[in-house]
Length: 336
Image (cartoon, rainbow, N blue to C red; front, side):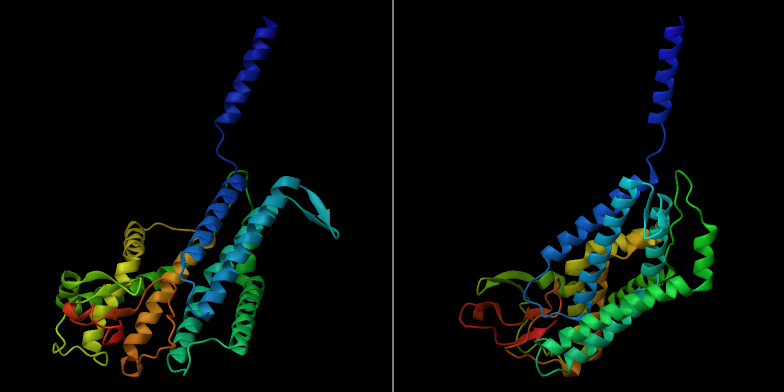
């Protein structure tokens, strides 16, 4: 009878353990691992013929920081309690490290977008689209500087330091910072897209109805069979806007729909998840479109021009359909 009671007690104890929620450290590990796999997938999908801009360098640096975070979480989870150089590390530091990364990622949206916008504006006026060694070195130093500055700000800001001290990791939860910068940035981009679509929706509908996918010189192109006398010129902002919308939404519409759904439902995503490589490339395409539209008078085509967007092809062909197979190259290729 005693043995039966002992076995029953042990079974109840195991059953109680199995009903416990997933350990927060294991959950963090799985989330960061999934984010890293997504980063690798997006970095592998991007076009390889693009010259390296500031955003390219920052995306790779973000993927590297995510990898470092995963390695540190793995080490802290495996050893649990150890001392290095007189400093004791425990499982609590997993939560502390995640909170520091969350605050760091949360304040990076505005400065990264500003620097990327300035970079695209300056590159549009350059005589060549190839990045020199000095420019690549400057990008590298800029990325290092921005990471160092933001880390120093996060660790030195009194409000953030106080927040890190007051929040203590409990057994089953770890408070995570939710960035307001990403919320307002996402909301602003969606509002701009909505206004731009409302302004030019008849032209957008006409473009979508007329669009054709054709093969030219072993490459897939977007073909708009408008007559040559239609009066569409690259220097016209009114004509350029619907083309920009079609090109942008043709690539990023699922991501735009996801942003609308997230904002509508009020979903709060931790900053260490929200700052990711797909989000940065989405913002990058939006900034490129904005720079093209504001500088429509400066757009011109050179044979040495390389696309500056790893995902959106901003070149569209505007030639009559019956002449597509008769010419070695399209009569006019415009940045769309």
